[in-house]
Image (cartoon, rainbow, N blue to C red):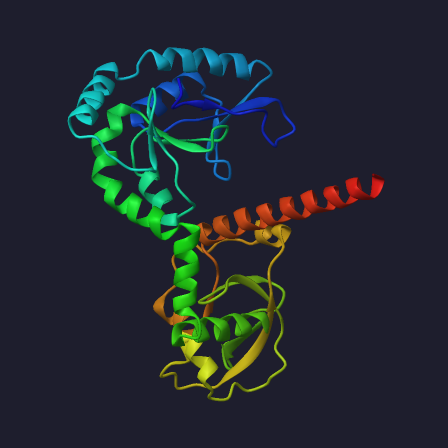
Length: 301
């Protein structure tokens, strides 16, 4: 069943198998009945089935689920395509519909919203069954427009147009400010040093020092909304990115930050914010390990 995928052995040391499939309440119920010990892995966006025989059991379950495919829906979708086809260089037709475009966040968002659409890692293409053709057709104008904007020539033309524009200069100033690793903090309500806190601009950070330098009015302070119309003094705090260990140890807030917390510019991170930062930190650590292994391999050669 092409819409359902079984992964290789997971990152955990214990034996088991990852399995991912498009969300459907009845499918999830059948899966949980078949594998009551399965647990959701938020980072992999997959279910992990423990056990030495998990791979074989998952394969058998996938085979049973394949028999449940909506054959009538696929036939109906093929008829709809034959009657009103999509003519586009970004769409290929085989035993299903295959979408191949330059990278675009908009395209990804649209394809993720199409039932049963999935990414084929080996073919490097998005595959959409014919039963989802009507939804693909409804979203196609947005997909194609975003794909055309993402073509290399179009990106270069857009960059040339933006060069030396006020927006581009603002982006450069904002990037330069971020590299300074400083952040305005209310002088009478400072965050704890050495602990992970959430901020308006930079996500979750760890403040390492607050030297006491007063933030003077300056165009750069326009980047910090908490300073607009604020009737308080601000001082600069020095920050760094938290490590994965620090993020794992951080206890999440029970509630969303209040408006007063956002106005002061920092608050105890929520579980949703921590999940995003932890996922990014794990990816960063894996990239570092990969680069280090590559360096060691090159030295040995």
